[in-house]
Image (tube, rainbow, N blue to C red; front, side, top):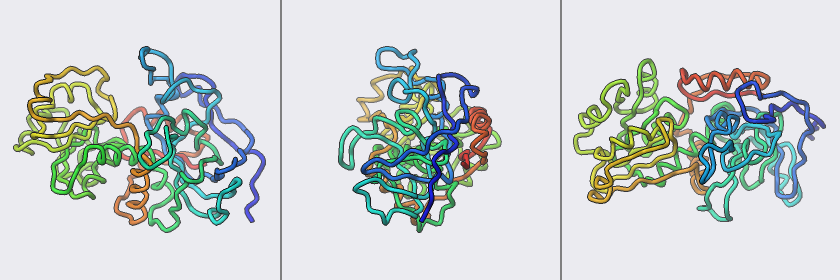
Length: 350
């Protein structure tokens, strides 16, 4: 029988701000409520959502400058961390005790309804406490048994937000085998996931990256890499003279403003980030005259996440782990993430 301690270490934020607002505290181990599981955290991966929630950078409808978490005001103090891999050590009422001892990955989303296609409206680490801690609770039906996966704990922790977001983009963009996909920001967590998942689906993958990261992006599975330090549109036209079927975009900004003509007839441009700027203008004629679609994509649905877990159980993808840090160095890990000099995921080990 697993003995769970009464207290644990957790890294929490008490207000919005820079890395200095991350504080390590000794807190009570949460008890799983009815329908929940308690997971001992083996690894928790970092995401841009951690930085932006800490900074309050998401804004709100009608007030884009408002300090906000992923979907609204943050209830402080908040334990950060959306991406958890670990082991179930206890369950609440109504949960099968056979889950105890299983190696798992947690789906970090909160949904607006039951069912496989519900929309995510909350995120672990923003709207509820996350995995920058030794233990975390989660709804048992969102705790996925990965005992048989060949991936390491660090790799499993890399999956939920980055690969979940990527697979949501691919599904909403209806990417099919044999089509050509263009991936922006390809060296980042979501970008590299898009390259791997699109390649696994049988698409021809063009990726946008730069400098020393180009080789790593090509090694991850890109058929061709476009250097963003040069004329991106010209390079894409040369690599895909018949146009691109689906753009999987985490950058937006000028790329979306200038890039719509790169789509084939009936092409789809899927946006899940705004690293290049959130205000965009484009020639709307290039949209309706060519039956193109611009699709917003925020994370994943339950169905998308189930599909991702199946892919991971079969070992069809191999997440790249750039660096690992102990839990107490969460601030330094976030600073490293913000520098964007790495390729792959940064992981904390509680």
